[in-house]
Image (cartoon, rainbow, N blue to C red):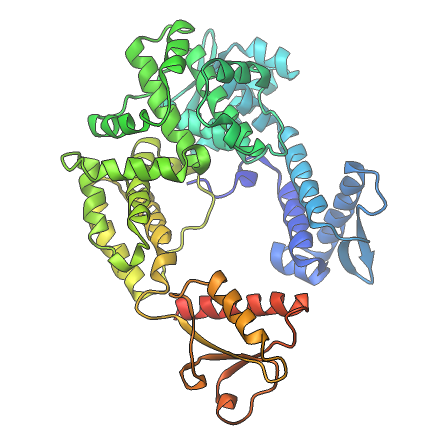
Length: 498
């Protein structure tokens, strides 16, 4: 599993400067001792890194409010901190580092072209042929470090990227989606206008419903698939059970036109074009959850319950039996959960996307029921997935239903409200709480004796002094509402993880 893209392609100094910049954004102010401790560097190296970073920040935007400041050996971004501006700064510097990495540039070249002569590599990227050979060896080392099976193989006629096709496409997707953002186009040999013209021609599903960022993400995925097909590459076909499930998806959108376009503009047969579409739509649907609406997912989920002979559905049904009925608010919630169980399994089995996940996989859960269900679900899928794939898949499933589980079995917080000076406020606050919070997480009670928390405009006396107390002075003070919301959210989470 790829733990950190920066470690694969960037120098140690570039990695450290990105870590420093992230510390500045997250912590606001840092000192040299923090750098020495976090990065395990000397004071001299720390000073040099900060000076280099100061110059780079100044070069990103010639703005007096956009700089790294040293004030009594305390470093911060300012003089006016703007999280949005500095997040953009971080992404800009990160992208600059990657684009200056010769190994990353060569990688993107072969991910797009797939096959090339050394002379073409040298001419296109403006490297010498001897340096190009060294970079190819370096990229192969990166593949090994990343735990991938793909390689750049050298032939008399040139160099070709070879390996499992789905792994190549996923690596291509992850290697650009992580680096490029802010609506930038990461391809050199396939324009965004071209892919959008194709999308308009085939009347793509839910195009206008997606955000601009998700439209870009969808276009990136389409381009990777279309480029691969243009290069004569095909993906391994789904097995029968996955194909049956895909046929439910086809009821929600029209894939015929795109399939015909691929067939007519490539050497693929009708069956191969259809197989490509299945993979494409499953992948898009996973990385862009909004691609299908909640109603469409519910419809697919309800149909899945009728496919009892499908082996993938059998696994999902066995898993559902382990999850308490209280976890589902209604039937539609259960349908969506069935949909998620089934489609995510296909993603983990056929796409192996877990290999490219950068999140740390935690092994512990807070609740005993979570731990119990984790062990049981693992037992169901142990013959279908293995290693990190199994662990990460099961963890995702537990995380999906955990929010429903947190407040099961009467774990709700009991709240009593009273207003000594402004009695009419009680009704207003009670209505607000009832409207905002689910009764399984937070419930109003009629007496102080029943309460865990008392909300009032006076300080507690007598029996209420033993209760947890929140002072709420006036409904017209915005800060009161903000602080109350934070307080209640904190208590809900604490109760859920007891």
